[in-house]
Image (cartoon, rainbow, N blue to C red; front, top):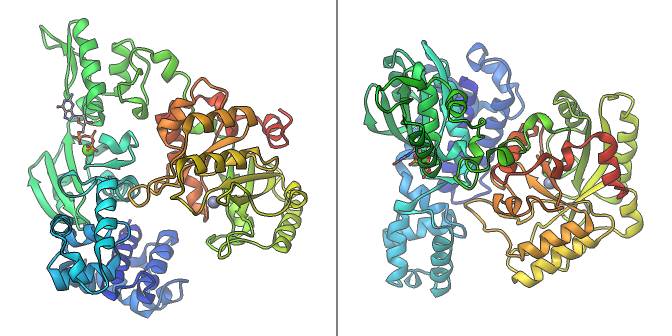
Length: 575
Ligand code: DGT
Ligand code: CA
Ligand code: ZN
């Protein structure tokens, strides 16, 4: 556990060092990032290693080894403490506004005393930015737009899921290790896999609350405690995210996680249903309205069963039909155990890939898949793409590896880049050499909607394209997706048979759940992919599946639940 905790701290050090150096490419920040990556992969606990052994690890130098030793000795890192003081939460939030950057932020703070989104909004309204050298009316307009468009600052602040989930998972894992704890569950909007969350709700089941509350107070992520009791501790992380930890008696854990998972609308609908049966439903139990006798409380399944409902996946709990049409919804939504392959996987042949071809294949074998595709970037992505020669060479290697990995069918693919006009890399002949391709938008996000629609439809019309990767190109909290005509694109997917990707990265979760839900019952296919750039990212599949669940995706519409035979027919357009 300490390795993961340290990795988190090095990530934070990297973030803060970029602010201190006013440089997103800061050399020192890079060093912290590679230390973090190295710690996440490291098997033995760092406390069992000598400093010499640490320095011997890839990605760890003397200065990072010193910091690890410092943390092991005194439970803190002096430099981190100093940087946290220099760059308080409000300032860090401000720097995250897309298009702002560390240099401009420092100027705003030093010259205008602006060090929070709130003050920045005021300064923009007062047209103060144009007095600062290098900034102008254009900057004001651009920043106002960014703040307005994302709508997640100040009181309305919402944290992107990619930021909240890892922190929540770490806290949950820490609390699971406390004596007497029999269950831990991340609830609220995070469990429902909403794109952004206002706060994190974690529930802990134990008969003895004291030790849990104590452990929470001692967690390294805690910046400021805002509510402190035996059964509830609420705190802000150093990055300003609120986390509420509630301690619950095991016998009512089911009722509690159901209540705090929400959504509120789902809860209200369930309570109505309970009332018609003469029962009440709250965070303690489903109980008889007159006698108070408990009908069900310990598990969610028991409560749903008592209400004559199948178990409803948390991703469906938005009161959008899951209670009225439970069989239609709940019984026919894709789940992780149905996934038979990962078809968007990078190796180190991509500039941004980290692990080798063999490691990525082994990773897919370890996850029990029947098929997979290696899809390194094609030549048009200048920094990250592979040349034709490299692609042909890789294909040869892949064919040779087939004997070594008999349990999995290996497809040689590529991730094509969709240009502004919808054209992709290579020529038709070279493209025909691939077993499979995914084509994605990586640039020109601001074209008008009609052009983006045409762009996607043109790419779908290309004979060589089998899947459209991360459909909107959005980065949650940082960049909105491209605008396009959803109905036209769904229709294009129906006529061409091209699948739409559900990209599992928490930054992306793309296609959005609205698009997936719109396609329900139509002849539109989806493909849930990890877009893994390193082995451990193959585990992101669970997020992609949960995103598909939010969109009520039926297994039949998800091509990577199909048998190998059927899947290969899809690849060769014979289906
Ligand atoms: P957010 O805004 O991202 O934090 O979204 P949630 O859904 O996590 O909302 P939150 O944290 O306010 O509350 C967590 C859950 O607790 C919520 O999904 C449902 C439940 N809850 C909260 N307030 C109420 C309420 O007034 N009535 C009912 N029935 N449930 C509530
Ligand atoms: Ca919440
Ligand atoms: Zn990719």
